[in-house]
Image (cartoon, one colour):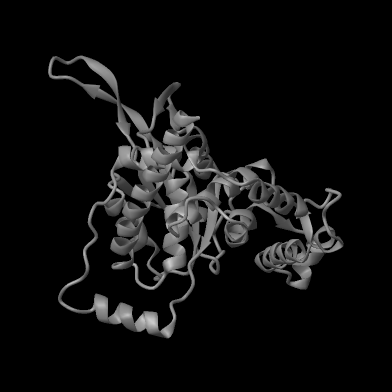
Amino acid sequence: MAGNGAEAEDLVADIEALEVKLAEAKRSITARFIGQERVVDLTLASLLCGGHALLIGLPGLGKTRLVETLSTVMGLKGNRVQFTPDLMPSDILGSEVLETGADGSRAFKFIEGPIFCQLLMADEINRASPRTQSALLQAMQEKVVTVAGETRPLEAPFHVLATQNPIEQEGTYPLPEAQLDRFLVQIDVPYPTRGTEKDILLATTGTEEAQAHEVFDGPGLIAAQHLLRRMPVGDAVVEMILDLVRAFRPDDPSASERVRDVVAWGPGPRAAQALMLTVRARALLQGRLAPAPEDVLDMARPVLVHRMALSFSARARGEDLGTLIDEIAHGMSASEAAA
């Protein structure tokens, strides 16, 4: 028992130390990515969970700036790829070239593509063809790539932060469901408020701009990811996660008539796994030792919205999945509070 007590004390001390580092990282990021604390929290949460994030927002809202700043603050080697319709898989993964040596001998040499990094920004990912999009699948899921029959590991940690324009759809290829499910969260990047936009103007149009500084490094981020998985999660939070995910499956007995009418297909077990991780990350970012039910409510939309689809009739009526998730999640919370 004494050993268990000491182990628990060590865990608490480690979590508290990590919270201090995360607070410093947030300060450094928000000094350059101003006024979007929600976006910063969700992006940091995806990195802490070892996952990938899909950022949805119009051009000019600072998504590239955010990823560049994250690369610096988290101490990760970053690359950026602008996805276009003519981009080929080899442009991302790399390719073998025939090289002639000084003695006239010839041999194949592998030239690494931009995916060989730790933080890859896939800009406007839906502009690439399905063939090129699929080149990311193995890398995102298995953290390796296969070129010319040889499997090559990617450097750990490896994260993909992809962006997508929600308005311009001409000449784009919607991401397949299998690839959407590989993203831990979907992050909506909104327009800034008037006050935030004023702060941005003053901070970015002068002679000097705030500079980010390194807080983590690769091994430090991996250690944080392992620590997050050791955080305790109470039974009430686990049951709430299960109730929430299953409530959005139209064929599940717990699904409401509204869900059966609006949702064509719901989230799978990977959604529950994502919630288990992200609620811990949210607790960490808020300086708490364990997640609470409000963490589940807050993370429901970014975790579930890209793992579901509206029925044809619901799309015709103009239904919105995000609104439905908020409605069902807060309804469940109110019911539990009343009980």
